[in-house]
Length: 552
Figure 1 (cartoon, rainbow, N blue to C red):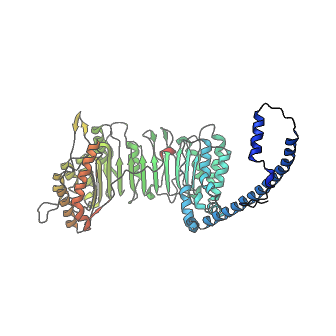
Figure 2 (figure 1 turned 180 degrees about the vertical axis):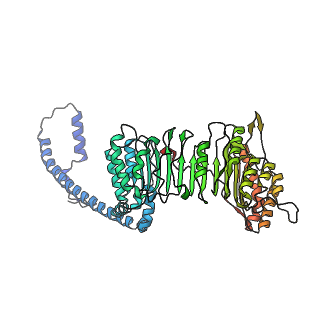
Figure 3 (figure 1 turned 30 degrees about the horizontal axis):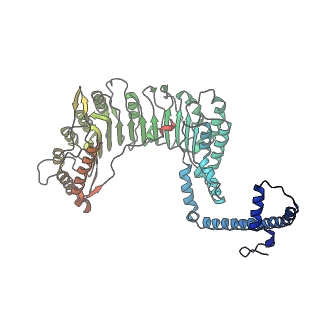
């Protein structure tokens, strides 16, 4: 017979015991009776065994059918998944866009805070290799796009023969593409690294003509091995150099002196590192230095001579009281000075001495930042302004990190007839000669004195001002602020750009109050914004380090 539901072939119905038979058997098994005639059960066993075999056979047949059905379903599911994958949006992306996406994964900054195995994976671009296994197309794109292999990071502390093989493979995959190289060779003199040094240098020398950007951390005493690169750095445009020790000498390092395309230098040093590497100073367009002392700063200013060059000096921290500094004339177009302030009086003396020694006849942008607050040496600024003709050249002045009083600011601005952009801030209280000094700068009084009044006999300060960035406690009347901005729009006949944000609040209540004050100011400014006379710009943010701190 066959099952009415699934049509499977079943044994005859009388092969199954009835409920009465099953109940009788259970009662006998529970009793203490002795079976007198076993023939009944023996015949049941014989007839039921045949039926049991029939069931087993049918089950095997059905299980085979189920396996076939499952296999067929799996094939169909895989086909559907394939159709979905084929029609997925990512399949419609052009290879160029895919490579752009892959490029974000290929960007890796090596860190010294990882294991040897992790360093090997970073060097090999393990994430990129995993993506290459997704499909044949992705594999072909990743392995056949040299630009994806153009960023390479080497950490000398983790180095072996296996690392050298991986580095060679990456360089070969990059073909003739220009490279961004990161080399941390701080342990170049260690016994562990020495057996691998020569093969590594030979490989790097073979490809150094492709270097476009180089970040190098090295013990100054090990720079002599870089002489092999001299005359070969034909493509190098930017270098970030950081000595890995607190002391050393760099004056004899000339490997970068004849790099014909080098225009940007980032240099991290200490006051105890003597001298500067020899560089093609006349062609440099940008020099960023961090950690130098007085004499290192002077050497840079003395050598940086390109008319359009920019000089950024971070963490300027002289070791002792500054001596009388010799006069220096530099033709740089932009100068940014940042120094950590531990003693306000001392920082004022240093800043004043720096300004006293400089003549900057082509300066267009000046930024002075003293974290913690520096007092502005207005007399020295007036002197350098007169010597350098800032009234003709200076277009941007950033004093957002300086303690400056209203009268001092107006004295500073009095001769800056060409100034177009100004950054100022309300600073926190500071201690001067054991006395707390708190200066309110951005007030009604200042805004009124900067407001242009038609037909007035008074000379308008900074008449070309079209951009103001301010960090404020909002200790002014919103109407006065609006009138100041409207007067500047009328004076220049052009839209005015404004960035305004609150100083860091000390409490939740202060933050809430600051938010209300800013909202009141913005409400007053809204008509000017709607009319197109006022443009809100992003608040100034601190500049980023040119290298990840993990790398050092």
